[in-house]
Amino acid sequence: MIKQRILIFGSSGMLGQRTIQYYMKKNVELLCSGVEESFFIDGVDYVQCDITKRDEVKKVINSFFPDVIINCAAFTNVDGCESQREIAWKVNVSAVNYMCEMCRVYDSHLVHISTDYVFDGNSGPYHETDRTNPLGYYGRSKLAAENTIKIAGIYHTILRTNVLYGVVTQGRPDFVRWLIETNRAGQKARIVTDQVNNPNFIDDLVQAIAKSVEFKKTGLYHVGGKEFLDRYEFSMRIADFFGLDKSLIEPIVTSEL
Image 1 (tube, rainbow, N blue to C red):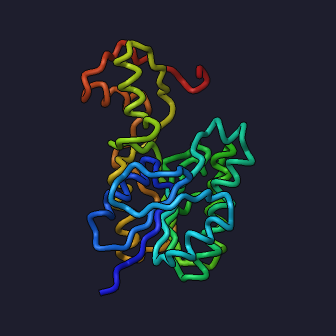
Image 2 (cartoon, rainbow, N blue to C red):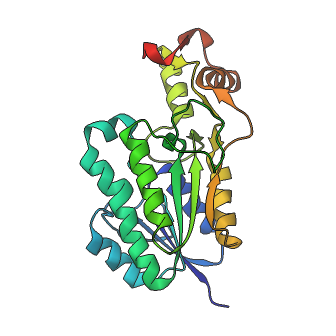
Image 3 (cartoon, one colour):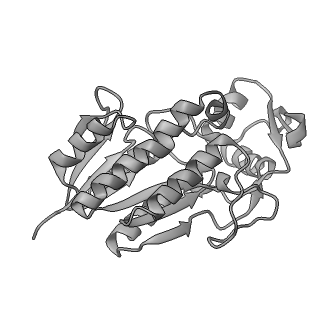
């Protein structure tokens, strides 16, 4: 039986790490890629690639001819996207376009991760058919990537998600880890009560990726947790579970940030 060939961009991020660890247990040919010179997960093939450079993306894909490309790479710093718009566009849009070009060559299935920031937040919860209206440059760049994929004429799956949390060994902290570290350091955390999400456990998103690949599901899907919580409610759940000092968690509204 011919093994499915899966290429993962954005290997060092939270989602990339967990997706790799999932596929390491499966009977597939796996290649991981990231901008870092070396990789910290043992036992996987890894190649360095700056996805903002078309020639590097082409080289990696031409050397592996993947059946599936999973794009976990993104410039996700919302404030950073405002101040570094050129870099944000290169990572979030141009790189996706390069992947689409090569997907056409090899008839590869592109699984791309998008965000709830393509909406303005005024009338959620949102369905896949709802009108988008991004307010910031991060959301606009991610929506542009979605549109790039949709018109590319390739086999694709776009998964929109929000507030990822989970356990990884490396990388910047997610919201849960940030809150725990801040609280245990005796520092106050100011958490908004007027931003509502359905936080998404990272392994559930990995399952959504895997099922999209396994059952060849194409199109656009929203992937989130089953409960809708504002950030303060979510923080209280975290405090209860990890025994944090709730007096250090201060409820505020977004305008107070």
